[in-house]
Image (cartoon, rainbow, N blue to C red):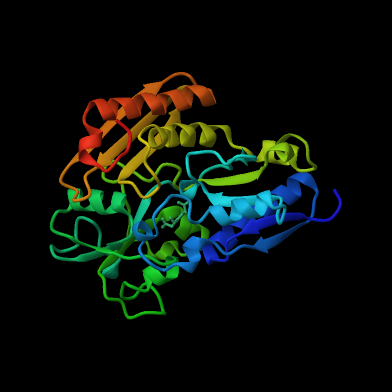
Length: 317
Ligand SMILES: NCc1[nH]cc(CCC(=O)O)c1CC(=O)O
């Protein structure tokens, strides 16, 4: 190809490590040189609560605009930040093998969910994490926080050099901490039986213009890079979210795994106060992308039939 492959990225430390890893891999698969194009997104500019900024895809829209305006050729997203409605003219051409899907408790003094004392303060900006924390440990005080990984870790004593810490713990995605080499702050990888992750958590999505996905010097590399099992799992998880018409900040968790030739999907819908958790599972033997999507839609319908819309703020009926 003429010129180098332009890979769009957000400027945060996490986005930069994720994008660098992906860009290097696609370069080595395609033989193309690459350059990173930094894009500022609304989610980086506004420091208010995520639920206040509102709308899905605050981290994603600016990268998509840059792709459509031909300011970059590829964009790398955290899949859990990607709206379930596909963007016109764009294609998620590769979903690489997923990292750890779990949420991570990062607490002072090595504390865990079982050993944090009643009244301990735990920071998270995610209604899904807040609800499941409250359900697991009603005595904890959940505090709404946001900011990048380092800002959040700085809220806990001893976890970061940049802050004295005013909270006892925070909850973050394990995948992000591993990618940043910060896994030493994790005091517990929370069992999905206690806390189901966000749909797509731990996975990345490589997006390009639709035409380039089939006809470009990097089309074959994207196809090689795609990881079938990960794509099946996240397709099922995201179908739950789509059918429930819920966004990435909804109190909904989902986790799919492939064991042998069976795809198993678990999902939870929580009330915001964590007093009600509706948790169901479904398995299926159709290991196609359409089969995975149908499994997710089916589980969402089971959840709706069991009263999901009365528990959480959803628009689906
Ligand atoms: N919403 C922000 C966001 N998007 C992706 C990750 C972490 C990496 C991942 O889940 O792949 C994070 C931070 C967090 O939840 O702690």
